[in-house]
Image (cartoon, rainbow, N blue to C red):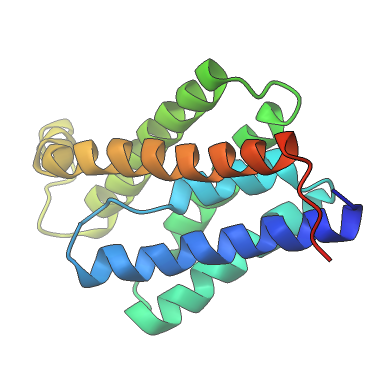
Length: 172
């Protein structure tokens, strides 16, 4: 693929995944989203690392405008940036095992950080170890969808891109 076409394809794939976020929300598939996959994919495929952070954050922001802005945006965007760093690690190590591992690691990171934030910010949870454990316990049912969504969308993005590269598809 030509470099400019390659970037366009990657950006379009990220935008498509972000649009899937709107669909999963519409069908109430809570936490089955492409958030981590977008960060991993951008970090692993976009050579300009500043662009690797901007594109997924911008895609998230645009979908957040539609879905509604909320107080957890900072921690979610922070997690997306961390996941993009994991994607950068993947850049030269792309294998099925590494992509699956990075996807699961991203899910765990997202779960731990976002739920810690919920515990810290929400007065409904006591500010104790027991309150923190309770907060994580309440979130466990959503974790399965997070892992499933991250694995599914990572598979779609990385798999589609590998398919296009292998076929040496020319886009003009």
